[in-house]
Length: 630
Image 1: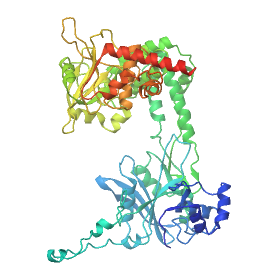
Image 2 (image 1 turned 90 degrees about the vertical axis):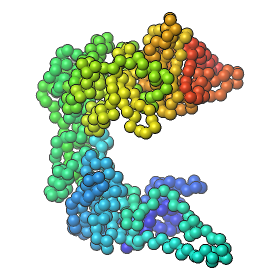
Image 3 (image 1 turned 120 degrees about the vertical axis):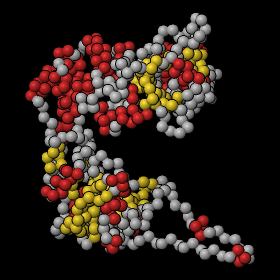
Image 4 (image 1 turned 30 degrees about the vertical axis):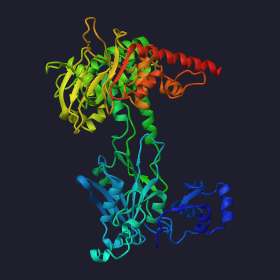
């Protein structure tokens, strides 16, 4: 059987492939009885891929062309396909993948799945699987790989990705013309070389011995030609041990395994640790939020894991066991979740919890530290709208990857190196606060999985405190030609008292994110320590000198600092309504502040007095625009 290459077909070409009249097909198209088109051509007309047409022909009982793409032109299997070989194939960097080769009507059908935790592309797996065949068996062979299922999805996704080897090998490239002697070349007309006359190839070229990607295929279609269902997998369950067990049992039903992939194990571990440390009595508001979150996780995971384990042409290879409650935890969580929360009491608990959690020693497998961190995030989320002045007392890690220039030097001059006896000064025995700084506020799971702390410590030069007690880490940049890298505990509160009419908002010339500081001369004329400019209630991402999202964050931060308004100058309101529009019909100029931010080249220097005036001008202009719409 000759397998055609997939291409796009117009409605008229659809009719010819389906052996139907164009008029009849137009009627079906108008009645929406054709498959959804895969795209449009340059004229805007609907087009269908070859596989879409062939799938529709077989699904509707019509004649499938002889050159139909796999598997639509293959006959139904009369018995389960024979397993030719099963085992692991080698991949780059010492990785492997599980492969099973079936004899599908005399032509190999390869089922392949990569192992969890291996960063290997599916095309690489497909190529290695094809290479496992003898060369004479490769033409026409296909590889199918299942999509890994997400526990948060609405259920199994019964599709597999498809790769194909052409029936006929690609034509060999034309040999380069022989080079003529120089004497003859002088008498012959000048001609372009053959390679230059060929059309350029756009995109990635497939090697002749590698399979081509062919989209996706329903599990039911694969099962039809194999005479057996194919396994689908939850993401995170394709370990060598589980894959080997499923392969040896060869039963079309899920293997029951412990749950290591959903949010439930971490959620119940946090709640249990909180109970063991008497959080339910010491921090009742906090425990109530943890209880609500844990109960919600139980409901979500129970729903996800009670989806059907089998379907048309597929089965789940391994199913995590449904979540269960320890008896005491379930009862106390139910009582706490029903408690009415007190915002003032919750804010008080937040202050105490933040201090306790920050000073805990870092242990990647410590559910109590994880429980406190999660509780703090829950409290902050619940109180942010009503108590921003209590919530945004915490810093976020600001990454200054190209730290250099006079402002940087002045800021560094006021930093105090941490002694090893400092509570947060030992990277070999770090606190949770120090780890959060070094890993840029990553989650506990991400820090452990990606070895983020180890990587940061390899680049760590020194640790400091600024005059306000915030931690600062100095790292090598790790990139030639780039200055050092600073990680700074950056404030998210309103600016401190003490900025005066002589204060300057300053940043060094930069090619990426930059540190933005308020620089104020003291009464005797000497500069006080530069103070980080916060973006109250939000994260800082400061750049300037162009029109974009990060300059808009800088604009937002300055507006909020001037007005003392936690919610002012969201990008959708201030920047879009004022800053990015030209002068209005009344002759009012667009934002001077925005203009200064986007046009400043090199270093940034803005007078705080000017910034205050420009912000109030923007506020007035915004009010003027709103009044004009009434």
